[in-house]
Image (tube, rainbow, N blue to C red):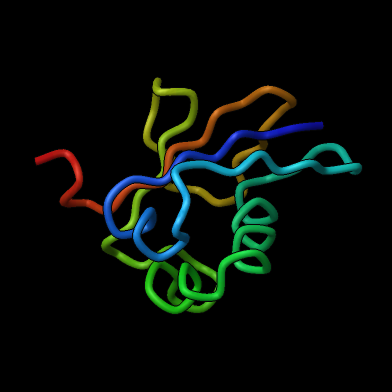
Length: 91
């Protein structure tokens, strides 16, 4: 299963990349597991965009450009596109 993660604003600055393609062998996967994988790849993301095992209040998630997600227990499926933005990225 492959999930695409795009970063905007501070998350982009802290990861140093525009996007990541993350592969998972287990199904289903929730957003908490996606964030854990991102944290393994990008320590600065964890330091600035996470508050323990939760997103910081300055960071938000959008799923497939359709909806903003509050629950990190939200299940994602193969081909989903996750946008991680700082709350000020939209202008």
